[in-house]
Image (cartoon, rainbow, N blue to C red; front, side, top):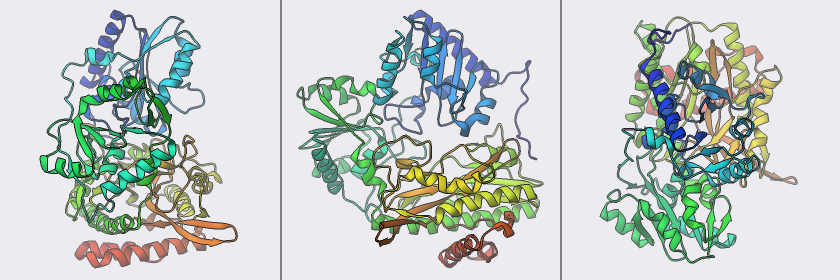
Length: 613
């Protein structure tokens, strides 16, 4: 089993990160005391409620040292707790060691959520601060009600972390550019018209959008302000006559501004949104998504009549049209070619006795993708976890802590790319040496779960969450399960995670989560053995029309990801004939689509890895 390469850390030799976290907590507590606050909650969020944050807004990571993409830090005079879900428990336990911050395993049956903890431990008359600029409106409503019942004051107009964060990074300044045909398959005018029509149905005169992927989709614009996601910091206010785009000066070139003006898009300073909202006539209707607009942003809209509903653009961009689907299929060919070239190199390097680390895997995959036409960037930080590291679903190798790939075991690789014609996300598990019977057993169960979902046929309008049980059943039968969702929506040259659909029993009930034709979603069941290995098999699937009969119209999944699933880890006698048939057919599709684009070692590798069972 590989051991992470990391510096020694004991009571006499604390890492600088640990010391920094302790010092920052001490400074924060001193500030809270000085301004009469008894507690402070720091979520993982920015004014746009993004999943991945610009460094300027990474307050929770800066303060705690935990750099996972999800979690909230609660600090009082005597307690500091980091709430994060099961994907990050192992990582958080390691990164929080010695900081004095307690890991609160969110979702575990004996762990209260942050609100329940505060209700139980704070006293009547205490004051709890959150930066309202990064707290969504729906959460603010819930917190106000919950704290009012305990006579605890919620303070939303302070940012305690800012008072102690010296050298805080500035906001990003990358330029905005246009996503243009042939890859942009909808016009800006058509997108705006569709949203305005939905506004009319909702009875709204104005519509405020703060989520960056919605704005990028709406206006056929892209940027580089947020790592891995081709978006830019902005707000948009859609009115009956124009659309105001709030963006920092200088980010949009004059030529692009002129093209935007043709479609009625007016540029405004990024900081001018508040005054414009306050200037709207009192009583006019404003459509907002309460989960996607922050309470701090809405302070200026107090005189308006709020209509709360999901952003119409959420559903519009989730349903890919036929032209987008065609580009996605072409993009999967390019991505598959890159992965074949990487995997052929990887296996040859190990066979030749070369030193290969988890960091090398990340670098080589990105290098292979960068050679493909239309590639822009990775779509998220590559997860390359060997043996025990693979048991952490969102593990990320660093220079300070990573494993060399050698001996015997399983390497989990979860990676993706941003291309002009689509966004990719794929996970494969590669054997190193001879896999054990236990590893083969786990791998086969996960493959059966993957195939079960891939082969699903279901009525139009089926809630996405219902399909989660289809994938889990092959594991549940044997008392096995995994802590993350089975599938998330994927953007079109946009965020690798998008809604509204989510194949997860833990998905919050919201409108428009029914699976519809054109939705692109991941299929990624897994199984994780702490301290041993992790297995996840992920493809992207496109919902397509299947049949229509007396029971109504049905949908099925078209698997669009193109890369062999390693058969060396399978216990073949466990697969049912229909499961073998699916895998053979999938490998035939992979071979026929990718073979014309490969030569040499990568071609030979593909032929070997797509042989029939």
